[in-house]
Structures are given as structure tokens and as C-alpha cells.
Length: 385
Image (cartoon, rainbow, N blue to C red; front, top):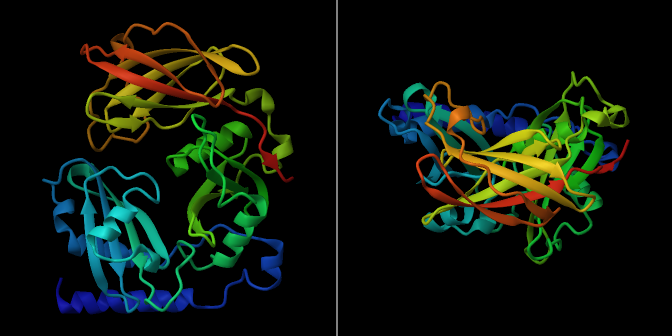
């Protein structure tokens, strides 16, 4: 990157940081009300996109291979790039390989500061998905940040909400062999008031959107902010914030049409001899099939849940290997199943909600997969209407 381009990017970033340092509307009395409005567009995003394009031009050439690339950037406070790290491992939201990246760059993670995360597309027809985390490093004598900062985002409000609604934020651990793990979520209305809270195993903002819109049929959500916190003993936790869309058909959760609520939330771990990957979350109504997708393994898993009682559910499954869709048409967690290519159906298996059960399935290429199913009942969350 030429000096002129670099100076331009640095100046843009400094202007953005000046906006970030302006007094926040969420201070003082608003903090007492714990209002967290939807985040404004972060002006640093454009700067980071330019840095990624200039630092990793190979990702934007037609020859770039399709699939995920994770980029971790360490930024100096003056807007310059300190170090970057590229990882071919598929990222999960907000944390995957974070510590590995910092270790590879020789930086202590405790100086990570606030961060911005975004996704970009490169390669031919956008087939290369680039997951970017940019950390604005704190000086050694500074304090660590509380997560991504945006123009109207107040870390003190984030922490106050998290610690008020999740008293066990830094101590929670799921009983051995049970799920979900400590993935806390908060649903806010468009004005920023907390409407419901809960916890659910999540791999993405899409998982949370699907779950909540099934839990409260008729609502529409928009925006997603996973925010990391650290307790006094160094234990970390993540709280996922999500908002009701300004045009949501239902804004009063008590008015949700519960007759349309799904019965079961389910994901699966699928393994062969070399690796294990998780599907995206699906929600099921009793007796109707759903398809869980493992993008990394190009597998679709068809699941039917049969009502087995208040504490258990009966599950039947099929599997198939799917062809990789053209890059321009590819969508994550979108089933590409062919109806005639499903495997034979597994024998029905009964499992207690919150527990797991293993089945073995052979796809149409005669490859056998170990599938571990994790179902849980969809129940009323802590609604604060």
C-alpha cells in the first residue's frame, strides 16, 4: 500500500475515533434505565475494509478459493496496522481462534482493547467469505475494552444489563453432558428497553434470530451484537444482544401467536474419522421435518421430532451429501438437498430434552457419519413485558 493511501486511511480512522469519543447519549440518567438502542453504523468499518483489501489482495482475485477465511487485525490507536493474521479455519462468531491469533502475533490478549467485526466477500462471484476481527490495542498501562464500540454503544450499559439479568454470568456452567452452554441472549425493543432474556447454544446471529422469532411468533428482529465481558477472576462470558425490528409486526411479546411456536430446537455434531462440525440450529414442530445444514462438510441432515412426552422426544433422521452450490447462489445454512438422495431413515431414538443421543448414518456415497443430536424444548423465556 502506498504512503498516500495509508495516510488517507489513517486520517479517516482518526476522524472516526473522534466521533466515537463524543459524549454518549446512554450516560447519566439513561444508564439508570438500562437503555441500549440499536447500534449506529460504525464509521471504522469502511477503514477496516480498505485495510483488508490492501493487505490481503489475494483474497479478492478471481483465483481465491471459495470458503471461509478468518482475518485478525491488530490496530494501533493512531490508525496504523500493527499486525495481521490469516487463518483458513472456518470461524464461528466472535471468538473462534481468537487466542490462537494473538499468540501467533506475539501479543498478550489482555491488551486487546475494543474491537470491530465484519464480513467481506472476495474471490470469484463472492465465493470467498472473509470474517474480519479488528482489535484496537490498548497500551500496556491501559484498561481492556468491553467489546465492540459503535457511536451510541456504552460499555457501562452493556455490562450493567449483563450483570443484572444474569447474576451467574461469570460462574454458570452447564451440567456435564447437557446443553446449552453459557450463551446468554438479550432481546431489546427498538427504543433499547430489555424485553426478554435467556440462554441458548448459538453459532451465529442467524441462529438467535431463528430461535427468537420461533419463540415469539410474529416478531421480526434486526441487528446482532455479541459482547464479551470479563469477571474479577478473569473468567469470560459472552452476551448476545438483538433488537426488535422497527417494523416488527408484533412488538408486545404477550401478543405473540403461541399456536405457531415450534416445539423443539435442535442442532447436531457430525463426525467422520478426521473432523467434527456442528450444524446450524433448526426449530421443529412435532411431526414435520426440518433440515439442519453442515456447510463445512456439505451435508444436510433431515430430522423429524415426534412428541414423546413432557421430558423426552423421539427423533428420526436421514442424511445426504450435497453438491457445492455456485458461489453466486451459495447461502449459509440453506439446504441444497435432493429429495431422491436421502439415506434410509434411522431407527427412532428417544432422548431427554437437554441431553444428547448418537446415531450412525450412511450417505448416498456409502460414507458413514456419526451424528450426535442435541434437542431441547422451546419454552417461554424470561419475558419482561
